[in-house]
Image (cartoon, rainbow, N blue to C red; front, side, top):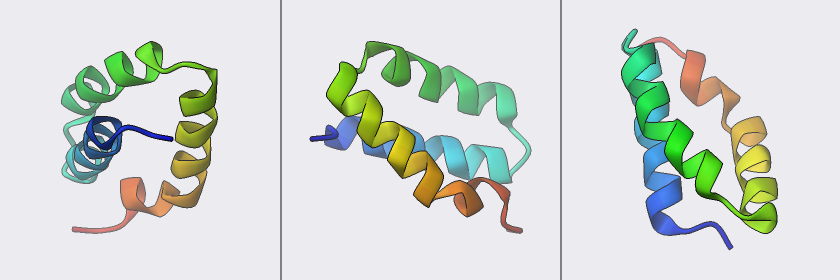
Length: 59
């Protein structure tokens, strides 16, 4: 199961990306993605697929 801290990091990264702060978004998301085990990685991939519009919609 995806940790709450991982989900919060991904949500924050989406928010930063929408606000044109891509470098900050990557700095937040990359460590949690790299630290995930194979099961959490699969959940992260699914979350990113399901929430792609969170990264691109207008603010």
